[in-house]
Amino acid sequence: MRNVCITLLLLGWIGCGLCAADWRPPADGRLTETQVVATIAAMKDFMDASATSNAQPDGALDHASTRFSQILAQHDLEEEEWNWALGQLTEAWAYILWDEQWTQSRNALLEKQKQLTAQIASWRAGATQPKDPADPSLAQAESELAEARIALENGDASMEQAAKDVSAHHVRLLKKHLDAWRKATGMK
Image (cartoon, rainbow, N blue to C red; front, side, top):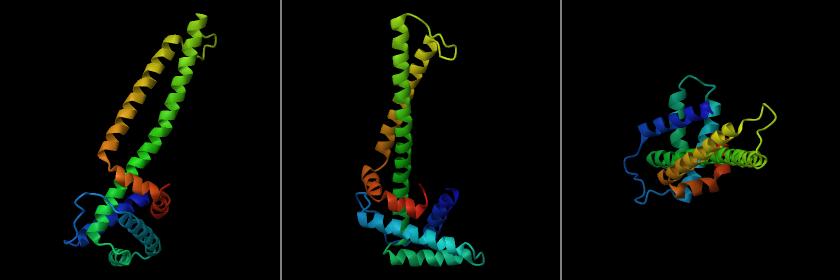
């Protein structure tokens, strides 16, 4: 993961130094499917080329810069277009990861909330405290339930805000090509 992040930063740095001044992002700010496919394919090719050239430290940066330009040309991408598209895809990828992690956490919180609610209802119906000292007391269970509700509200609000901050179009496009993105970047 660390190597992938370093490679992404290196690619952005190399690309910024080589940017063509004539390419401009589209007025609507939206990636096209062609750009997504080309960017992912170029990423895969560059990652493959980087793996083989890492064994040759002499002139590695010059070689990487030359190879980077060749790969972009093979995929009909200009450097500035690559930088912009990669930035958009990376932002969409971060949102997708966060959404996946929040979904797992949310499901666990919902299950905990369900269990605590049932436990509290059972205790109240029987008007007794739990007999097992390892079980939380009614007050502890109610406190945990309140914390779970707050965590759910805060997490949902954060995801709602994140959804406003990222392009839903880019997220949909990346999700369509998620397997290829994961293979190209080495991220699971």
